[in-house]
Length: 236
Image 1 (cartoon, rainbow, N blue to C red):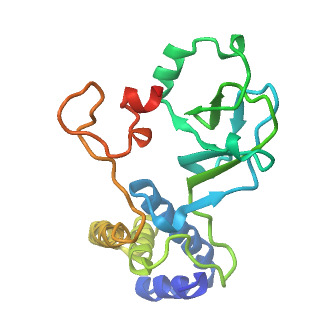
Image 2 (image 1 turned 180 degrees about the vertical axis):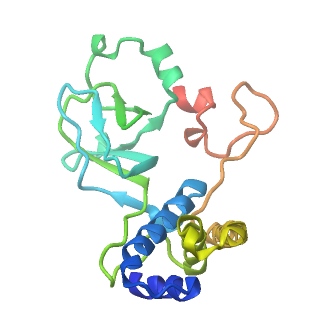
């Protein structure tokens, strides 16, 4: 469904024919999608960015857009020298601070590691060349505005409508639907979970195995570079 269809669905279910409510319904629908993105990760919101982020000579940081929810993978790409291309290894901030307390005092070079503080990505060693960063990232949803626009999360229209319905009954006391807020909110949670469980079955979704094998204990991750507590993976 597009925004126009979703809005009509909500307005019909609310039984409110006031044309001025359309703006409110659009906002409730967008809030519904945002709430879903806060609760779970969705494959439709994962993308590979190869054009926006580049390294800067002598600069340790890369500013991330406010739309970035989390980073899954970072690659340093040198199109002039394949031997310099590499997947960067993630380090938790506390480990990076322990091992490199003052990065500017170290030599520059081709980055091997990255960590993220807020909306800033740190690279180590500090880059000595301006090169591309290929980043697999999870983004926050984009608000729907045009009638023809569609939700950023696909195959979950019923959950999106249920979330907007809960907002509607909560925001419009004249509907006398206080008793329905809980009903629609529960329906929203149920349908969101159902949609996400199906989304996780899509190819490429990969949980991190637990418990972590940080100190040689039993159990472990099959991908040390994806395990933030694996010292062997993050320090190699």
